View (cartoon, rainbow, N blue to C red):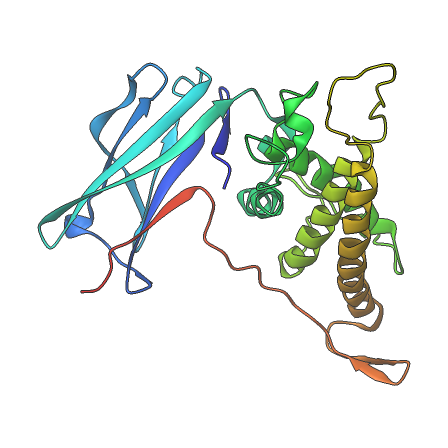
Length: 288
């Protein structure tokens, strides 16, 4: 998985979830402390012993302020706690990046979708750093999470609103200031559509790959990358469009009924994308 990005100057939470036998549990005295270090220069950002906030059973967090996220670079969080008087340590990492306006505008649940979408592409073969080849050339500042957030906020939500009947009025929006937020019950469809649109976005970037002429030097021919990505896009588009049609049918006939189409029963479908939140580092304490 890619390292979690934290936009520069933004107040962002870091967190820890403690599991035992698959169940969230609290440590001794409900106490978890942390230390944050800039691993590029070993500068201590949050001093050791800083107390975190208990949110619910087994879930602890600390919110970084704008001063603590002012320097771009790589950071490590070390969490300290004890179980049955046995000291435990857990580490997590994040990266302070340039500002990410589209990412920052997403709710935490919507960010979780963006993380899941990009992680599907994060192990592309052609990039030495992970992710599509785009970040190795002229787009050296390629930020996968910000790109996915941009696509979700613009291309994906427009497609979902206006493709197939019925057209959603008022149009759904995403982000912390959305007037008509996308229904959480249909987050799975929004994620599938964002994945397909991200693949199409990657394909677009390969349209203008040149063919060197009058050269004898070996080179990697990427001119067919557009076709490869577009073939994958067509597959994912077919899957995600089927899901979107199911959602639209539910809005046409109401959420309490089903309808017959071409002799087949199409029930209402609700998707629960239950996943651990990306901003929490998960630890498993093992057996009792």
